[in-house]
Length: 156
Image 1: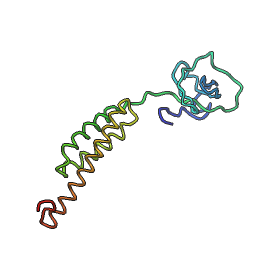
Image 2: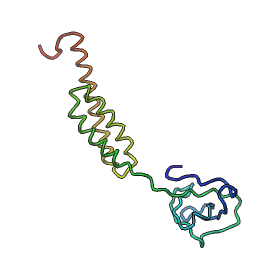
Image 3: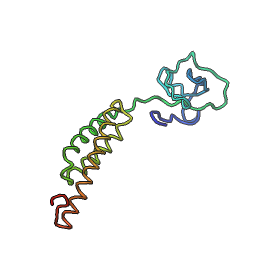
């Protein structure tokens, strides 16, 4: 599960477990007693809440385990890198040996940065890198044609 880590699958493996109800969806859940007071994520609705002793309930047979909520590392740096490489790709497209790797890496970084707080920068990086990649490929094809035929198609 994204953003969470499996904390075990039974009392023997985890120790003493407690049952809880998700405040968002009402689903019966269970968690290790060490998770009391810590943020956890419901496996059904992805709602994050802090478990407390008062919310603890009993009487269910094998409710699913709660997953501890871990702060995921923000990929904002990848979004920024995608944007910067997209801008550089627009400048470097006229030299295919430079433009191609710059735009491809910019595209990859933009895609990896989509799930970050810099989503707008990631989208802009993807768009700019895509435009740079198309221009680079056109320039490469035109250069290959000129090299193969020895003539300029537009200079007559």
